[in-house]
Amino acid sequence: MKRRQKLSEASRNPSSGGNPSSSLRTGVAREPSRSAGASKPDRSRVPPGLIVLATPIGNAADISLRALDVLAHADVVACEDTRVTGKLLAIHGISNALTPYHEHNSERALPKLMERLNRGETVALVSDAGTPLVSDPGYRLVRACLEAEIPVTAVPGASASLAALVVSGLPTDRFLFDGFLPSKSNARKAALAEVGEVPATLIFQESAQRLAASLADMAEILGDRQAAVARELTKKFEEVRRGTLAELAAHYAEAGAPKGEIVVVVGPPSDEKPEMTEAELDTLIASRDPAESLRDAARRIAAETGLPRRTVYARALAQSGDDRDGR
Image 1 (cartoon, rainbow, N blue to C red):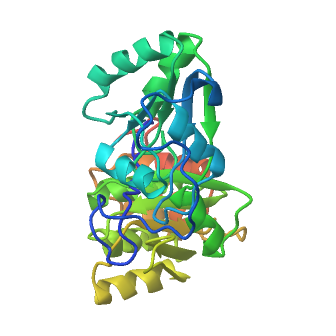
Image 2: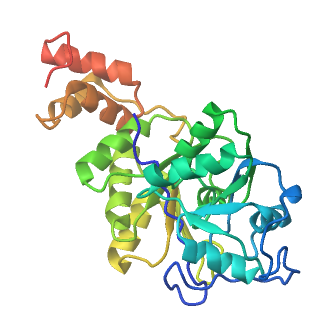
């Protein structure tokens, strides 16, 4: 099921929390890879093809020397917002050709980029912040390049989801990134039930306005697991708040919506299987919303109780006296 693979990591001024076009913070000074007066990039410095390049999520110093070299010497830099990427390049003394490539112009822009790539040029693909393809239409460009046998390489770097994971204090050996949850509570609960049984740490993006409600739904569907809310990572007002889902939901319900970009990290389900009688399970099944199918109800109840989904579904079918997924 394809959904919610959108990650918002807009760069903001770390000192003021301003808009994405405001300055990024840098802590290092380096010699420009390409002077502002240069007319053409040195194509011998980078290989031809598509280079998927990660950019900082807030602090402009969080960029590799290799990334700066590619940004300076690629034939063109394809980016979500030329103002944001232009500001990053200016901080590092780089001047290069920029072209917009984002969700709203991808159908028009992709053929033009492919023309350049087919001529043997080097295209650097970046997002406003973080790793491309997680939050932009870069996947389609990568697929087009592979089908045309054009080389695709990566210059790895910053990622808000991974940064949040490693500071969360939750298990990192196995994790699932699930992007943005649906905005409506019922759809959000269904989506949470879908991943509730996954034996891994879960990573979500969430808007500030929906954070409290989303955390409350997580507590209801996933159980009161340990979690962390990370916001404004790498920026001046970076904050990571840890606690149970219920505690975090209560905090943000009282404190109000926080500022900045937010990542929610939720611990994996407990290995301990709760004891539940058949009568208790029957009561849960009987209390389902009539609009909810038996299959969806079984998925949700399994996530809430830790019981195997097949067991819950079989009991639901027996209770309904049907042998198929009815409503």
